[in-house]
Amino acid sequence: MEMMGEMLSQLPSLVFFLVGTVAVASSILVVAMRNPVHSALFLLLTFLCVAVIFILAHAELVGAIQILVYAGGIMVLFLFVVMLINIRDLPDERMLSPFWKPALGVGLVLFILFASVVRTGSYATEVEDTRPLRTARVAVRSEVTKTDEGRSVRRVTMGDRAVGNSEALGMALYRDYLVPFEVASIFLLVAMIGAIVIGKRELYSMDEETNPQFITDRVAEEKRVKEASGA
Amino acid sequence: MPDTQAFLMLSGTLFTVGLIGVIIRRNMITVLMCIELMLNGVNINLVAFSYRLSSLEGQIFSIFTIAVAAGEAAVGLAIIIQLYRLKNSVNIDEVHELSG
Image (cartoon, rainbow over all chains, first blue to last red; front, top):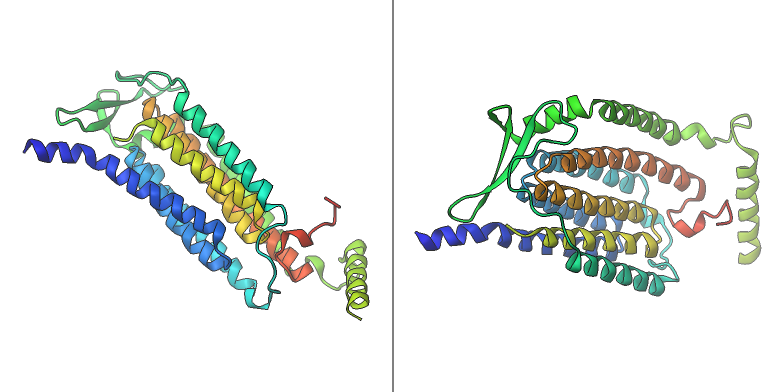
């Protein structure tokens, strides 16, 4: 029985390292894959692993939104665009930019910097007691307690009533962060209209009135240069 | 439960992989995917500190980040489609109208 409890207390760490390893490996494969469809599928795997990690960190609602918005919405958008753009018609050219070696070096240096800051950094002490949100007008409290088996349990309370993660987050979002929430909704509306307007086919039509002259000039010049170099 | 440092290492790794991808890849669609990777790394960071500090604010910020990422992906992909119609290519080096 005691061994069972010990194993159960180790389970979150085990799941974290397993899922984290899969997330890192699939994110590297996103960068390494030549075909954008393969990249998109590995990106989906990364999103799902990150959702599991959110749920491990007791952020259940964010994990659910991660799956709904990223895996459900953004991935479909990416795959849709990959299918609109016929990759087989594209010329077979080099995948990496010519200065990929210095870029890799810069990335590694940045990672070492991150790692050293994380390893040696001093953190604020873990808050054990209940603590109200700084801006809260509703007294949402969220506390992490350790059970006798060593498992950590998060308990979110509102007043003297225990609530779920979604309810507490909703209260905080719709009361304390109402203005940012409305700004985000306006932002999404603007992004939607912008995407529709930019994606319209007529933007660069051959119609003289709507066609910006510099683009036609440029295309004609590029065609001329290509023909001259080909001949 | 894994400690905060493990979460931060994971978030830093995802961010770095995304950054390297943004710099070295030439396919515009893959570059956009790598930006999504970076945003995911930032979200892990926010959620990890929300857990550590017993505060819901990190989770609220990560929800806003997800909303911004959705809008950014939609507009970015629309721009990519328009550039593909113009250039017949999704290579990022083909786009040099501003002499960058």
